Length: 66
Image 1 (cartoon, rainbow, N blue to C red):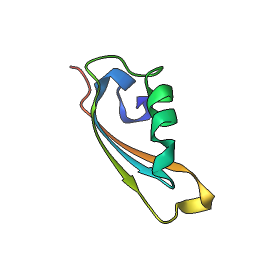
Image 2 (image 1 turned 45 degrees about the vertical axis):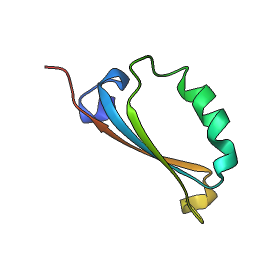
Image 3 (image 1 turned 90 degrees about the horizontal axis):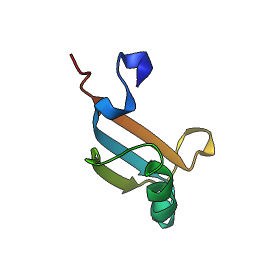
């Protein structure tokens, strides 16, 4: 987020690509340590494979505060 000129609190939407949807509960637990309400909108998809055998890939859209 900082590289894009913002902070985690500026994220308005996340897209999560997971190798296994069974990981959703763990992802939710981890994300709760980084985000606070109101949480960003989110879409989560299971995919057949990710680069470098990753288990998760995250895309974020942020709107920096002015």
